Amino acid sequence: MIITSKQNPAIKKLVTLRRRRARDQAGVAIIDGYEELSCALDAGVRIQTLYYCPELMGNGHTQRLQTLLASGVQAVELSRDVFEKAAYREGPDGWLAVVPSPATSLNELKPTKNMLLLVCETIEKPGNLGAMVRTADAAGVDAIISVDGVTDWANPNVIRASKGAVFTVPVVNATAQQTYDWLTQNNVHIVASTPDTSVNFTQADLTKSVALCVGSEKYGHSDWWLQHANQRVVIPMVGKVNSLNVATSAALLMYEAVRQRATN
Image (cartoon, rainbow, N blue to C red; front, side):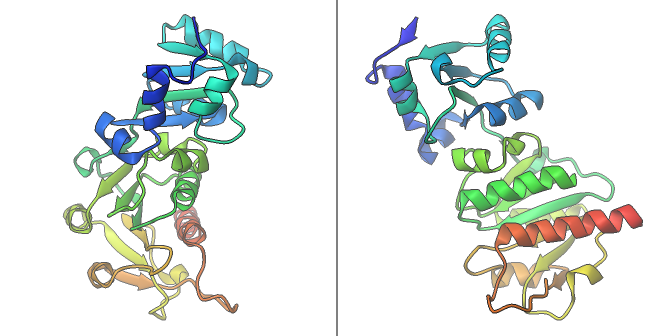
């Protein structure tokens, strides 16, 4: 059976998941795109419902679709116009899946020796959050904590910008106080990036258990977080612009930790 009506109740319900409140209430995320869904599946994510449109699928996707259908996954075929209504992105590729939300809690995060964490305070733009997750996956970061996050981990744009890596790296939502308490209880050194210090980020010891912290796009870290950090570091700049993009700053910090740990 193929759904050909945009007024179908299942399609209307699917469209509501574009809103954060609906996603939070259902505890789900929408994966829109073959690459992102493949990454999630390879990470062991379980599909609740797969929506697909063969007419929009690229070459080479048929085998994966047949494998999923043969596995018994709940799947619904949509006509092209219905799929384009349901899809979040422009120019969809025929793959859309509802899966459990990737977000976890601090209680589920298990500390390890020389743990490397990224802490993002009040990040607003999904593209920035997703880009940081993608880099964190590449750098081998153990987990990412979103402190008082404005956007959610299940946001389709976060998933898209991360290329699905939001399902490969543990991602956590927490308040500033909860995060600080957890980090201190587990002896994690808190290193906050800020222009208000003379300590170059390459001078900090990032070889032990450490939380690399970046602040919001517009204001950087809150005074509270800077006061509770164990160390403040600066990424030097010589240009006219007064700040780096937060995802770029996070990438520099993460790969400095990678460099130090490789030579330690």
